Length: 286
Ligand SMILES: NC(=O)c1ccc[n+]([C@@H]2O[C@H](COP(=O)([O-])OP(=O)(O)OC[C@H]3O[C@@H](n4cnc5c(N)ncnc54)[C@H](OP(=O)(O)O)[C@@H]3O)[C@@H](O)[C@H]2O)c1
Image (cartoon, rainbow, N blue to C red):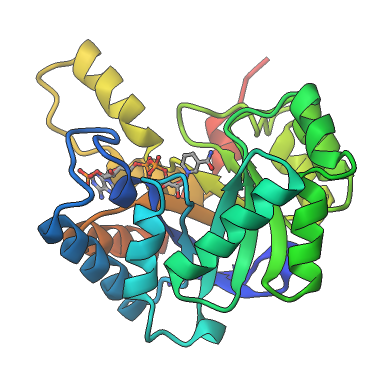
């Protein structure tokens, strides 16, 4: 497993991160029941197997099934040495008091006294939201209090978007990490031929950079099925390798629910011969 220092957090983390959305959300990406005893056991087993195979970055959120995903991580990581893992959760968009309430419940779900990272769960962040986050009595105030009390070692935000609001959050100097959507289909944060994009901005600001949806949340695979229904080639390894090949990406998050997926994805991450030169992909002869 490759490890690196995760931006301003200074903590060493695995480049493959365990994404917790799939294990907690009902029918996320395909039909799935997260509350079934069998599925919970499989997800707990998957997280334990990931830990055994060297994955140290775990990402969850109270929004993944009203705490279901956090409870799974709480159970799976109960006996793990907190110093040897990087546990990240989130809080939904809300006021200072909402954020505290959500965070206190997260600690209970996760059976932890502290987490390594609390992030604003920002699906889409526009300027109006960014101003509400930063204003007095807003979310940022709570996050800074949580960090000051040592209950979260770092604060960050997650976003699907690359826009002015995201740039303002990066440049505010308040955050240690960003988690953004970036993969073969959604390349908006990284344009190496300019060069331009949110990943460059985040790197300049020294943030730890995690990216969500490394295997495209099934988008690429659905497209291939539409344009070439006969196709049987498994593109997932190449999609994960694409993200891991990006020199600005610290952690590639992949949603997993079973030990088989964990073992396959650890093998992909460990196969350094699969990395590509992304700049060469973007080469233009003009
Ligand atoms: N706004 C936000 O904060 C936000 C939004 C989205 C995601 N995230 C984070 O990023 C993580 C990753 O994103 P995601 O879970 O949405 O999407 P993803 O990682 O692109 O896709 C997850 C799905 O990919 C499939 N998969 C994984 N490894 C595979 C393999 N080797 N071969 C074939 N299929 C494989 C799994 O399907 P099966 O179920 O069939 O195993 C899984 O359900 C999330 O779990 C979450 O932690 C954050």
